[in-house]
Image 1 (cartoon, rainbow, N blue to C red):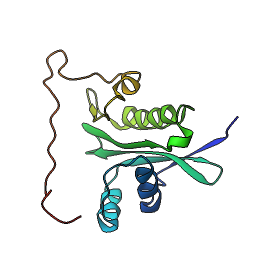
Image 2 (cartoon, one colour):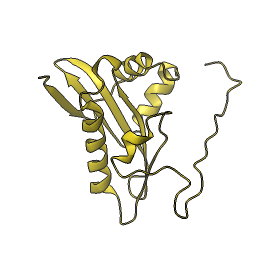
Image 3 (cartoon, rainbow, N blue to C red):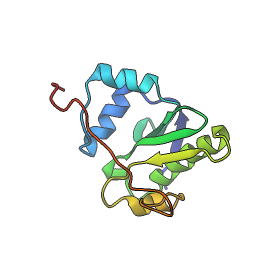
Image 4 (cartoon, rainbow, N blue to C red):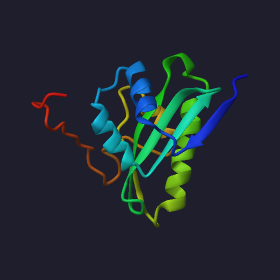
Length: 143
């Protein structure tokens, strides 16, 4: 059985870029990644030995709003409970730091909604909540 190590607030640009590339997520320039990670409230890196195999992070205001980002598991290590470990760590942080009725949100990749439902998230629209909405900005700028 694999031995995994959980590291809190250890996400580096190198780990971030490497794991996101393995699942073909949007590329961002190194300086943009460094700036974004410097503003992360909390992050988690899961390692198998010395190898990073999963990441996740939280952005937000630290009290009322928490947004889960970049939950990524190396495709060769998926379906081994690593995603669950990441989400348990992230949700623990939110429960510890959020005020009463704090808001936790995320945007699931297509087909991954069921995974997040296991942690209490629901698909919108839902009971008095409208649809989630997103917008990509600066798409005309070079990346």
